[in-house]
Length: 410
Image (cartoon, rainbow, N blue to C red; front, side):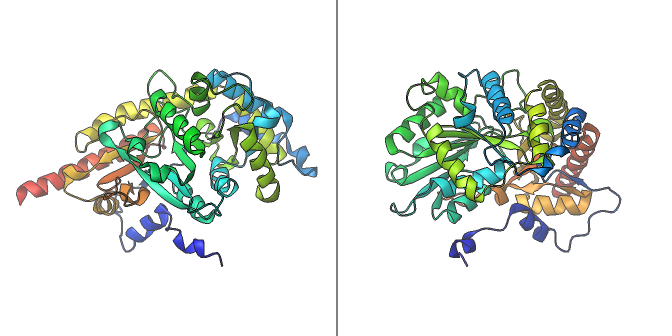
């Protein structure tokens, strides 16, 4: 067996299952899960219709490259959303079966384990796929901690040159999971300069890009590259690719539809890689994806639902814990030290008392540079409908007030 499999950590939800082992939740409450970032809003009917009305294509093998209409729809969305020059759909866009699968496989395409001891830089906390991808590609992950004093931005400037010299791949997540942090133009300029100096590839995970709480949409990697003068010439978007998905944007996580786009030289190699190991997207999913990428009205409605939830729920939770409205995404990243409980104690006790599931922040991060930036934090996914989210928030508030009252009594 591949010895690198032994390096993989249990997934956060397996750790949560073990944490809850033996706990009998309060039967007075119906269970509410804020633990898993799975969209719960209804799938738009027009996407379901496009999916079910396209089953005639099942008689043919789909191409790994995807259909020309789908690549054109994705390229058109990128151009409209990020105000970038037209992309070549044949050379710069590749449909994939969800961004998770592509993010994982991409490391095997990029990493050359024969060159020294390759590193893959990841944010910390992070989406665990980045770490697993690094190990299975024959590299080691190097974690860059987020800084709460800098709106959870990662301290890339603090990474030593001797580390950057070994980096072959940098995963960034903007908006971030779980922090909601967005990379600024200054951040992107710094990373582009490092990529040019050391030759590593940047993989930008942007699956939360369409769920934001202000008036301005988050800056994307291709958009930043264009503004930095990197979208043209003989080698456009050099060493930069972006990953996106319909799961959160369009409430279709079960459809498994996303894309990779960017540097045509990198995309050429990634397409070659995927012709061997990447599953081609089925024709019905391609048809539904075209419909989804070509419509923005449902995205605006979806975003409005999240804005309403965060506007109502965040002030409630601020009464009992340190939490702020994030820039984007559908998570609240809360500090629970005011309760006197650790993140794991909080999650276990809350589940027992109130039958509400939250995810301990330490499960989403690693000990790096003397700290685990997820310690004493919890991630709450506000994915349910408004009423259920408010019910969960009210239970959490009462739980925290009960803990505080007991502490005062002692």
